[in-house]
Amino acid sequence: MKKNLIIAIILLIGVSTYAQKVNFNDYFLPKTLRFDYIHAGNSNSESIYLEQFKEEPHYGGSQTNTIDPFNYGEFRLMVYDLASNKLIFAQAYATLFQEWQATEEADKINRSFYESVIMPYPKNAVKIVIEKRDMKNQFTSLFEIDFSEKDFFVKKDNPFDFKTSRILDNGDPSKNVDVVIIPEGYTEEEMDKFKADAQRFSDAMFKYSPFDKYKNKFNIHIVEAHSKESGTDIPGDGIWKNTIVNSSFYTFGIERYITTPDVETLRDIASLVPYDQIYILVNSNKYGGGGVYNFYNLCVSDHASSELVFVHEFGHGFGGLADEYWTSDVAVQDYYDLSVEPADPNITTLIDFESKWKHMVDKNIPIPTPKKSEKYRDKIGAFEGGGYVEKGIYRPSYNCYMRALNADNFCLVCQDALERMIKFHTK
Image (cartoon, rainbow, N blue to C red; front, side):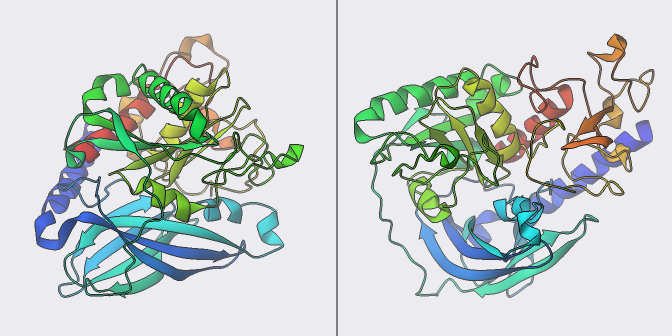
């Protein structure tokens, strides 16, 4: 166990040292370059097509850590200085397209999704690469494009000028986790309700571990982006609303899954402030939510369970945490290859348990850990069932917010993953 822990520490130190070699001011300006593209294909093939480059006035990310050491998502944005071929920025992320690829519909038709990635604005010419993780956890290049800081086709306009403010202000965005809460389905007359809802959810998040220890490391921004109508689309009930970011329940046919395909509008609104994470707060009392790693999070405002859904979805969008349940209806099929270790920090196939939380398991805890024994209910182990699969995937604890909303908190493994992510963004 000590040997594994030492190896893990050496790897983390190595990654940290590598990341520190990128001097932000040598390569970047403190504003954002946004790359929008179309992601299209089916279950067996995919392509990426350039849509636009856009300059945004703020950059919310760390100016110390520019290389993502976690690699949790199915995709990676890699940015290389063109003159030296030096990697100067990297961030992993997930997308709705990748989820859709694992649905039955993707076996039958082609579809396209609007997607977007952001990076600090390059001072010089760069190569932008989007890589895709395959089922064996190997990344390969999916799309490459050179970008010049002199490109006069980079758009700088923004169709929105909504009022913004901070409801939690701890200063410099480069040293804090910046979350922007965007209203969906709140009319102009309901902006007071939105501000009160945003404050309520912001306060709620910091009641849970590990966020309670790091409230002084977060900025929470709000943008008063009003919709023409209240609510959101509920296709299964024949309800369609004219809202600012065009969200909808029944994503991939799952009633509770609420997302938006209108990523361009969403990014334009978010760009009014510096941000690391986008959280869409939907004005509805219908149960639902969604979270896509380093893409966006959604939660409804007025369901009895909304507070817990809010932190669960933030676990996905910010922490790269996997769902730990397997009984609820999901659209995806064969989402994980059980012959390899999944990238998500809170599930394991036990193929490479040493790379996960084995160092946190007491030597007296059996692996796999019996689910039916009350003896292990409050212990860290490896409980079978998770990642939408009943057999072959294991979760760290009997219960956790990533499994069920009746848990007491995030388990210690999920807390550890979230804490490491907070530190990466703020140190």
